[in-house]
Length: 81
Image (cartoon, rainbow, N blue to C red; front, side, top):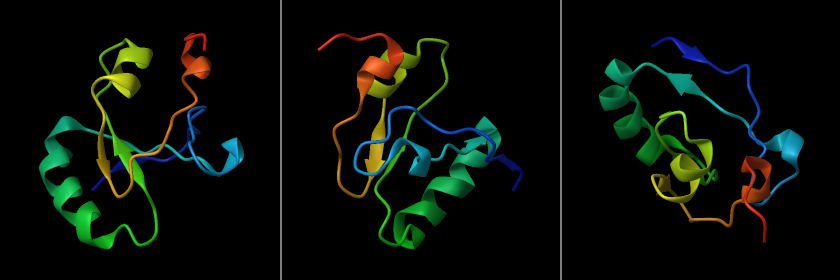
């Protein structure tokens, strides 16, 4: 399944920002990726969200989690505390 692992996410919750990784995949691959992710994520806590063009809402309102839901650093998307 082709994925783009080139980006990093500024919204990493628990670790250092440079430890946060982003994987982008085509919508057609979602049905294969998520069932694999759930039992095989190891110790990782992984948010899964769409890319609608509204990064703040995608991370704050539209994310689902595999693992523990962690606090996000939403200031990276322009939200002030």
